[in-house]
Image (cartoon, rainbow, N blue to C red; front, top):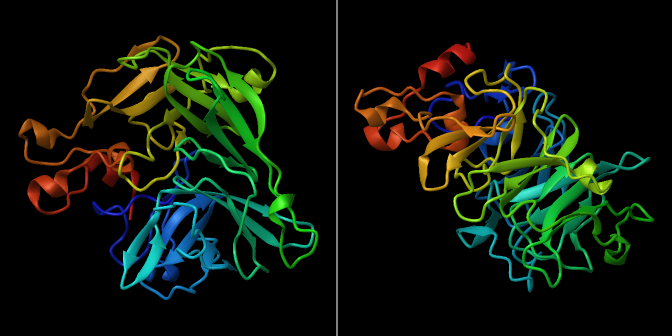
Length: 356
């Protein structure tokens, strides 16, 4: 993943910091395209980007951050989604731009080597899709209720939707990619409708449902209680498809970082991380911001069913005068030292984990 902006997380010479969430290895490539482009989201290790403050007809770019290879797709403008009710744009000098961190995309490559991107915007009830050979984006003929739960995995999209005529049951939907019969484009009617692969029954999850990919598996994370959201559960989607309701008590020592899309950090997806990447958090835990006080981070151990003390907070709030934020605080946007002191500070743990 590319680290969030701010707080000195990137090198001063223009190189960007990337962290391998499995091995904990940092790399610092120089990405010239980021000088005038912003990252909308990541997809299969690549960066989907849009030029900032450019022209309306600037293409959407898909960048390999380590090789510099770029594939170009048609521009997405307000005209692209005209009539859909989308408010998913930021305006500047009469032009409109997609908001970073509010986009989910999947990538597919056909047998002829043609790349296709499918895009979900949080407030747009239809999917957009285009290939590198298309001149404009196309829309699905069917609609859905967009929300923050959508994730992509291995070319497919997964999302949570309320079951029709039910306020408490959730459907887990899988959206397979369309493929054009000819290289020139794809008809909206060729885009298969979402299929229900599993149903989350009443009482399984009553609040804060999230999807996250962990070790090539899709997991459903949420709370069993209605009010305080203190009892968390994790299910494998593969188990639910088979009709098995099994509470996970281990995730191979990994930790799930949930709620990132709404954290303000700009990271538009939940993450699964190993202890090698983030040794300051415990394994087999769910990490989230405190629902009542976002400056705090909480850890829930799925094996013991216990929460960690509310101590994962920068010491600057205790009056010590220096920043003790670790990388996890920056990922959640929970470090506000810049706001408190007027200048950015780098947490000491981060200096250890990111050698120059």
